[in-house]
Image 1 (spheres, rainbow, N blue to C red):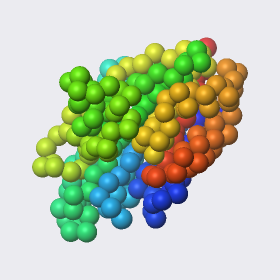
Image 2 (cartoon, rainbow, N blue to C red):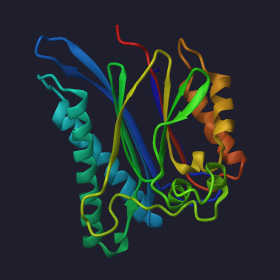
Image 3 (cartoon, rainbow, N blue to C red):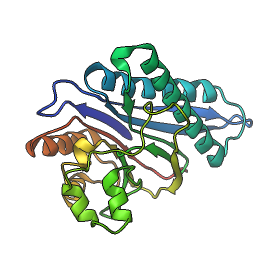
Image 4 (cartoon, one colour):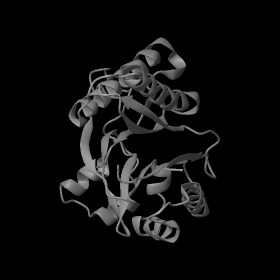
Length: 265
């Protein structure tokens, strides 16, 4: 198993506003050869009750539908740059769909969601994100943060007002500055990057129910406990990560998407 996704309600919330999916497909090249693509989509909805659930679900389903419609039976070469641009375009469509549905249904008005969306093709992770859900890469026994939170406390860190360590415990750490769906409906700014992957690297997307509860050193310890370059038990790793967050109170929904890379031959 090269990828695995798991979500848990946590110990406090009465519903799960996170939503995530992982799936794989093959790109058909003009010469008849194939490239395998693994897609990871993770969202943390907000708006309370059914609104948050609907926003995260709608974002993932919109993204998945757009990707499959664009690339299934694709018979032309697709560069990493173009694929990244497509992911950004699909995020904008998700953003508009959430905003539009919120306008049409008063119970859903103001709903929004974070998103981390990535496609692994050959030896690269094409990564896009909005909000404070995160993407990490575990490599050489170390956990590396790939994304930068769109949050008030991250602005404080950037401005030198607080340290990254202080941000973890800051009372305003849940205030997000960029989100899908909410606002005026104008296009949202999407961060994107192309990340090279080495053999055995593990990519993790997670909601703040994990990275806002466990410190990075705690997450790293769990990774090192389960890591195997020849094939990590991703299901066991995901379960342990979520259990660790729940043992520290499980104050929020917690979701992880995991993928372990093998170098293309």
